[in-house]
Image (cartoon, rainbow, N blue to C red; front, top):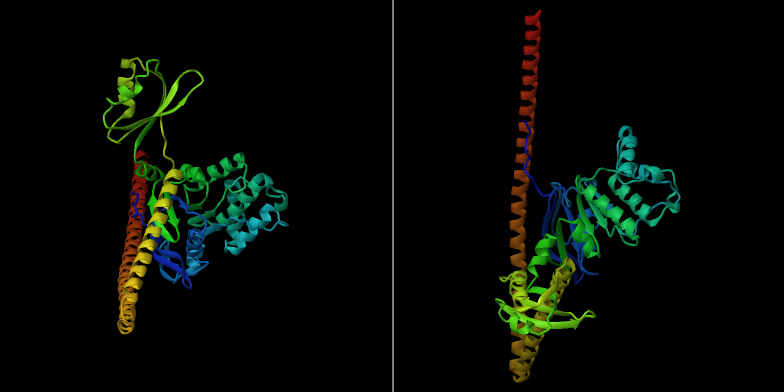
Length: 427
């Protein structure tokens, strides 16, 4: 009999904000990451990725909000949270005068690995990351790819629940990149992995989920395939044909829900390439294969445009920047309009209107503060309930395990007694 424990998020980021003076680096973001998920953390430079990762690791504190790692609150149990996390920074800080094994041993000491378990743990980590053959070499004599592996071994040695990898393949050659990607996939079977990368094709290949952040705001939390589907506005096909009688434009008009047909180029072999666009409800391939051959148009090549994670990323970033620009423009227009109204007033009325504007602004700020305070109060209440529920479930799981152990012991005892009786009967 096996007890199936309820799946709980390993990482919970709840309404987290980080401010540096008047600058907001991370603005009220929330997301969860499940056990053994490999998650891509994406965003342009200055988006707030590193700030968020540093808050999850406990390196910096959030201005507001909560971060919970494996049921531990980072603000209340920072040491316990840090033991749950292995962090591999982009710069791969290593001690070049140490051998690979010496460095991993040193990291094991830093992470309080028990002395009697240390050798076994170090051997396992060196094997898992493919460093057994170079364990006696000085780190300074290793290639960039092997140095990345050493850094990863340092992150892994404490057997953390969560691995945070910041740009793990940067500066590597294609062979080394493939090896590190394979290693990350392997690690994802036993660890929750957060992977920060600028190489979007890499994220698409490795990660089950993607978190996109820009200018401190959370833009999307979804699978790469779902993000790609969401931004696919049109059904677009490129087709290369032999069309001696130039009938394609006339024939294409018969295609259901066709939006446009555009000539792309003449090819050296006398064929022509066209782009056809229809709405999503139409299967363009089926329509083309059905109509063109019947009208003496030979199809030599047909390909559907592939929407990539990069396309989705760029579109989301563009949409957010457009939204910010529009909001800024509206605020400036509103300000200019109010200034125009004030300029038309008499000196006395203008003074009174400015006074009233300031009063309204103060009230607005007060209302926003009260609203935030109420929300924080509500979240604290929910957090207490969550902790209470988690403790209850853990208690239930432990009770169930004890009952299961007693049942198994009793079953073994009965089986042993039965076996003993059967042996006695045979005698």
